[in-house]
Length: 68
Image: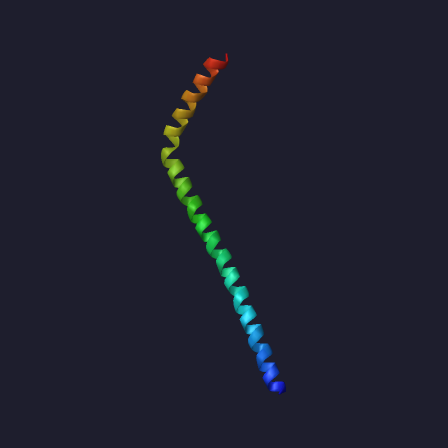
């Protein structure tokens, strides 16, 4: 009877450990997805940086002329 209780307890501990590992894996996967999104965003902004700078300069000039 003690062996059965011990095996049941060990099975429960193994199952709990497996669930804990899966949660950690999900966190790592989300971190990798976030890193990929950041890299892609930075690459897109780098390629469009000059155009965006020109647009913001035009907006700034327009707002300066309206305000002052």
